[in-house]
Length: 114
Length: 119
Image (cartoon, rainbow over all chains, first blue to last red; front, side, top):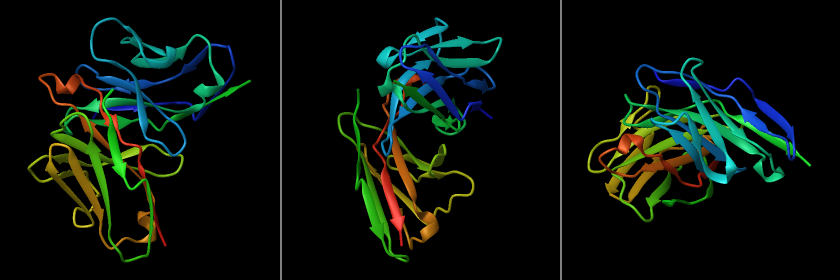
């Protein structure tokens, strides 16, 4: 089964500092990986995806993620955090056995303090 | 990016009643839509895959007679929670997958969610 794991329930970082939200994956075959962000009582917004190609993927709002095959990781990063980045972040992998639905990690709450 | 809407955004109903939630893709046609359920501070759990013109595919443990899904057009899927009970209270989120030769590469676009509270 295609799955992802987010080992951290919460990440705290000071505004202006770099942030990393961790994600590891377990898939058979090539992984199709995604990051989404969710603000309170809202749907999910797409940040970026890795399908193939360069291991460093750049996405929306200054976020990027690095695909690391040897470590089976797809960590989300941003060089300089903003208070407005505070939200719930989900890593997801496409489930090729379920009509291209997404299997989500449990989510990581990011808190950026001024 | 593509826009997906949901209606209503929140609904409160009495136990035993049925509630219909609509999911629309506003600027693209979606042959496939997905329905997820999210409990507070938890992840999204896939409930079913909705395919235009055919029966929905339900995930294990999801009662198809309780959660009726209809995908009558390329821009609309509906989820009806029948005979709702308090344990059905949750945040229901739909998503739509744009079509294409490489649809598996495409990101899904999510609706804003519907908060259902059953009294």
